[in-house]
Length: 141
Image 1 (tube, rainbow, N blue to C red):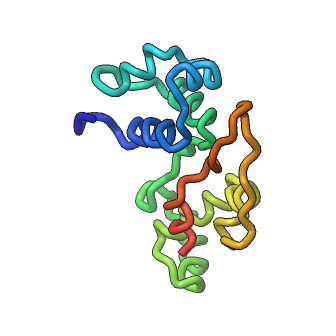
Image 2: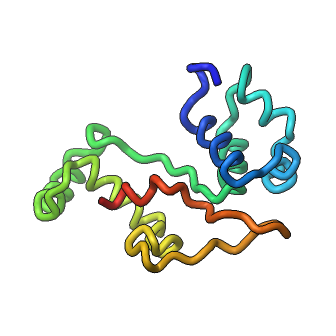
């Protein structure tokens, strides 16, 4: 894919490949036209609504996360003692907070405990791998 394709679009195609979803299955599951998805590879950038629909079908949430410098001073001041206590940087603290707020730990218990792994129920008739990318485990460590 060309370098101008963003990381979210690369994620879409990587997950489609990993889950072995065709364009037709992705269109049917997300409601985004096959031609639109295909065009993301070369010429079109997806709109936020389309990107959220496809990522949702693939088992992902699209969450806007503020950067530490975008936080109001009073919020940063409240988070700093927590970051210090946990030995985390401010970006790591924000990431952990977002994961807690979005419920990622509850939906994917193996992110906390790899022995708690349970396959995600299939959305289609054929068996599919879990909808979490293996690299997400690294977010918590």
